[in-house]
Length: 372
Image (tube, rainbow, N blue to C red; front, side, top):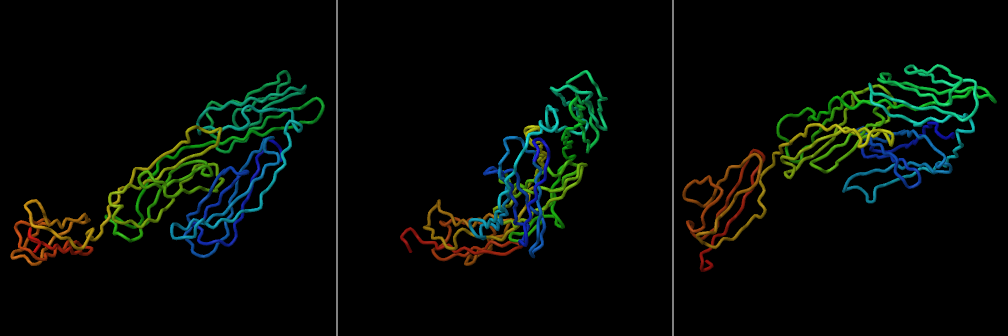
């Protein structure tokens, strides 16, 4: 490979299932460079191909690139996660200077769509002319300068490919390409539930959807799912389209009672590398508060109470939707969840909490102060 030029590596993963639990990771040596997850819900084995763009420099000569396929099947799956690694690819890097006596500063640029950009191209050799070729900001060939600048005040071309060229006295014309990444942050990020409205039922499966509108380029986009401050999942993309796209990512959840009033949200992050804006541009969706319906369940099924002015028979249970309460072995019908032990005779009292999803009972054994 030639220093400063861009190359594409490819990782092929064969016959794996289910791919929604698959993560493909790229490494250089022991350093994690990138990881890709998949949203396919196909149950049967598939082949997956993931690519990585690299631009090696002289320090990368002899470096080892490799990829690993990891299946994260959750807490119930095998531990540690099944992981299969490719045989490392060792690369040889040659200096670009020996091929063309031009230097770019910077060697790569990242610019927001509509933003300004300026890159210097210079040489230390005698020449018959040098210049910039570009669809915007071209610089005509000049013979009496060793530094020329490609400059655009408002860049509006998504796939621009500027080239600096030189005609050295001792050889024919040579060129150096300037890699340009033009980006745009999303217009909006929106979260919704798929084919469902209203409260969710405990134990049922639901699908959340995150829509990211008008973002580019999506190969640098990561969509992350959170519950509260906990990262649940993240998705990257392999598309190499330069112009803005819309992306939709889904998340399957199975809420329980602890998730009642939980906040789910997603965010879109553009990681454009070291030359890109820091911190990474990130747009978050307005959180989705979920309401979970679940049936009553007492923390214990039996409780012994000694009659006292302060001791209560407390049948209150946290539940959604709110329950109704009924008591057995009482002379009159009472709907309260709390009774005073001092107003009852010794004996067994059963309280039942009921809502639309089910019921649960608790037995109170009331004893007199003498223990009877």
